[in-house]
Length: 192
Length: 186
Image (cartoon, rainbow over the protein chains, first blue to last red):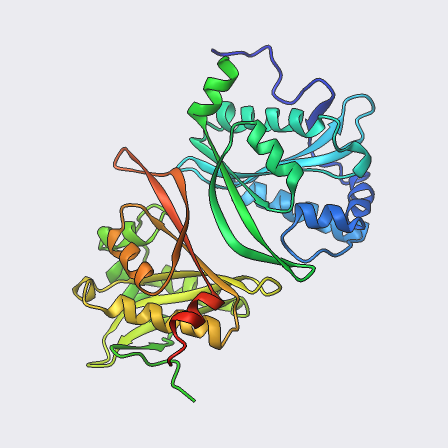
């Protein structure tokens, strides 16, 4: 059912917004100085980034969104004060096949485990399936990121692929788990 | 030391953009070939556009190791293969292969190429694992990958849509220790 009244970018405690090139580099630079966040969110080697570097990344992201049209990037804000708390994105969209990859991160440790991630994911899925009309989305998660595993399981994602021992961190080997959710499965859930 | 460029039927080579562009233009006309190997829409590019594309992709060669394939018997250019290192820290690469010349399908050429490229990945690039994906309908590829030791790691449901039919993609991987085990007599 068409539901124009329910806003795509507003949830109970969080909202989606665009990048703010003035204030966000400072905040995100702080997240990158938290090694735990970097290792949960990135498969690349963790490294701290200065606000100037983050700013450059933002420009690259907006250039990609503009030129390739297969990336949708949102900042996640707390509704109470509009401060930046995370990011949510759909990337590598294949329009002919109707699929894309989603990523979601809550930056500061004190903002985690408060349901913000769930609210952001609810919005991101509605956007992917209700606005972009994708057939399916994929989420790729290192097996040690238990919070992310639980979140995607809670949202009905099916574990589809396990790249064995694809990560080597702290001298241990970890699988990379790939979860999939189909538009039809998501529709069943939101109907219920 | 062994010659890591030569197999029993083929050798790995590098070709000038002009030569490759001509070959690609020919192979791209064969949509069955394209749809087996790729998930982007089939399309027809001019030799000029192909040449520019080939030159541009050669620029990031520190992450990607691309080869052309020539037969040992008569030096025919029959296809391409490559490894794309997605992470040096985790020592993993993605593998891609296509035999553009359809007369060379199902005759052992693909398997020979696969053996060469996997060997290259493990003993020259010193990778820890190699990953690949394929369309579930590409049964010939699946058999070849199994033959050289790739294990099934998962299935992406309904990843592709062609001719109105939804199909899955399959994902496979091989670990260095698995390959060593298979090749410990060499």
